[in-house]
Amino acid sequence: MPLGTRELTTAHRRQQLALRAATLAEMRRLWPALSFDDLDGTYPALAGVTAEMVAKHRRISAGLAAAYLRAYRVQSGLDGDLRIVIPRAINVEQFGATLHPLAVAAPKAATAKAVAPTVAMDNALTRTAGAMARLVLDAGRETVTRTIQADDKARGWRRVLGGGGCDFCRTLAGRVYPRDNADFDAHGKCGCTSEPVYGP
Image 1 (cartoon, one colour):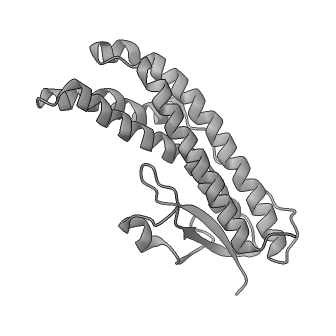
Image 2 (image 1 turned 30 degrees about the vertical axis):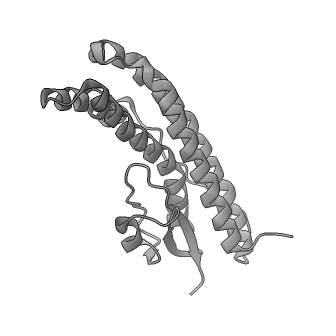
Image 3 (image 1 turned 90 degrees about the vertical axis):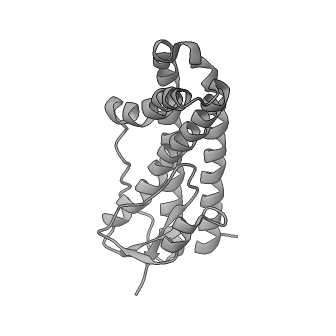
């Protein structure tokens, strides 16, 4: 029995949340490549493997969103012949501007304020993992919003909470964003997704 639009959205949200969890776990596995005793010297190794992981998971996120969009359109009474708009890959400069301040600059700043190195590194891992998870799920979110932007049958899109949602996300959930607005605000570890809106 085919899934309805609500069930499709729920299934898609669960898939993206599972990918977020996998990204957080993978970041914890990769983190030991960075040594507090030589943050600058070991950073390139961490950056390399993290960039590969994020790129791989972004492709998965975008692929999940593409399949969801086609199925959702069919369940909305339209055909599934849809031009999927995949976001561009993150370039080296953009990636470094996200990773380096969290993984290197933050622990240095924290220990300069007498925070213990182990605590500083644990905090850095938490923030870094959250930021990488946001970058990953952004690929799926942007695939939806940018595809909707190019779909003249769509009215817009709405934010779907990834669980209970924080105060920030709850204030943005439910409203319908117009088709020409492809900007999705997300924070570290954000599990929210975007859902197409068709009809009047």
